[in-house]
Amino acid sequence: MIKHRVRTHRSSEHFPQSEHLAQKIAEIATDPVAVPADTREMVINRVIDNAAVSAASVIRRPVTSARRQAQGHPATPGATVFGIDGTYSPEWAAWANGVAVRELDFHDTFLAAEYSHPGDNIPALVAVAQHVGASGTDLIRGLATAYEVQIDLVRGMCLHEHKIDHVAHLGPSVAAGLGTMLGLDEETIYQAVGQALHLTTATRQSRKGLISSWKAYAPAHAGKIAVEAVDRAMRGESAPAPIWEGEDGVIAWLLGGPDAAYTIGLPAPGEPKRAILDSYTKEHSAEYQSQAAIDLARRMRDKISDLDAIESIVLHTSHHTHVVIGTGSGDPQKFDPSASRETLDHSVMYIFAVALQDGSWDHEKSYAPERANRADTIDLWRKISTVEEPEWTRRYHSADPAEKAFGAKAVITLRDGEVITDELAVADAHPLGTRPFGRDQYVAKFRSMAYGVVEPGEQDRFLSAAAQLADIRAGGLSALNTLVRPVVLDQAPQTGAGLF
Image 1 (cartoon, rainbow, N blue to C red):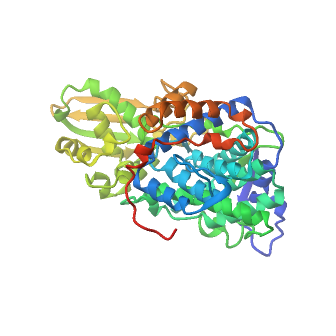
Image 2: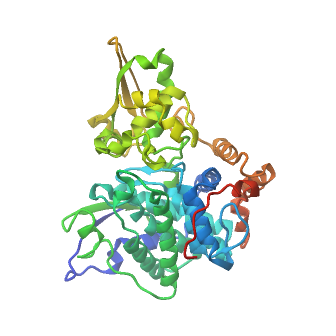
Image 3: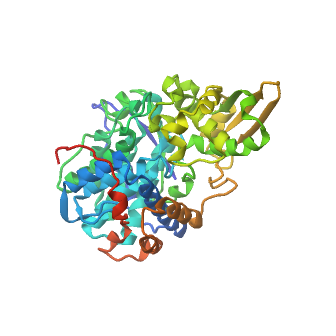
């Protein structure tokens, strides 16, 4: 890896384009280096994972709204929209499929200086690949770049401390991945990356307080914007520059300010793109810091004979978990039984309570209004708090994969004074967990989520196509779409008339 120092430059300074971060990204996007076999196989795993969570979310209201918007933009050749026949304008297919992937907070994750769900790159690249008739190998190469760029930005540039949403790293990664997939030149990719970043910065209010359905739309919007940015750049249109380092650029006014500097590590020329291997998916439909908490709660419930005897539960955890999904957020909505699913998904207190009571987690039942409003759950829920422990925060930010941790220590005090403690550093499904996800687990997750939604024969067809992604010839990527049973789609809610 080459570490690039990125800082603000005054307009009067000599700062050639060759030194811009967007240019460095364009250079790795055009590097013809081969994709390693393990990277290729993980790309396939994540394509399967995205299809799984899309099947689970297909008739939820935000997904239905996005799908109907896309259906207002038919196109030839166009791209497919998950679950249905027909072809649609690729940016709108990217939009609809991006919402389906993101709605349940159930796909892959990478956490470092910033947060990310790098699987959000997949819908945009697949849509454009279908539209232009790309091959499976082209798509794999593009996704290797997209994952690399997003994860490398996440490692080195924190957005959330400045209340900027993590999709600001997604726009550039999609643009770069599209550049690789389409074989674009450095200058075109440079301009597309700049445009995509300029148009995808937003505040973190989408993940604060009463969280709305926009949480599912935000990454899809970034993907759609990046597709449009690439289209404009291909036509010769340029971007604000230098977009990160300019005197009035992203660093100076949205991030650390004029005196801030960031170190971004990017692959050297000829160095394989392997960042996808450092990311991890979810076994449970909940914010990633809750994954280990769910597994910990399931393990601890066997040590407590009477949950009603609990006096208090304190989760000792990292700064991120404490302030984003814990009591350090100061959000009263995180204790509100009538809160939105998106809000409950970001309440580790609620999640730990339900997992402790049920010994399991379900993407629908665990969030159902009747489940959240159970009197015994509310009572237990309000006994739970979080505290930040410096050691958990240090491990959260560690660059050493062997000690990097996203878990917590639970201290459960019973009314008779007995104290029960246990801790879990990583989720069971994490690569270092007790049951790490491999191809069999990704397939099982798809089968489970697609049960009753996708006909068994269609499940088999999709899984076969995905497994042979590298062999799909140019023009054959529509095989990655999965058709949903019409009787299921008929149950989708009415969303009202829009403009399209």
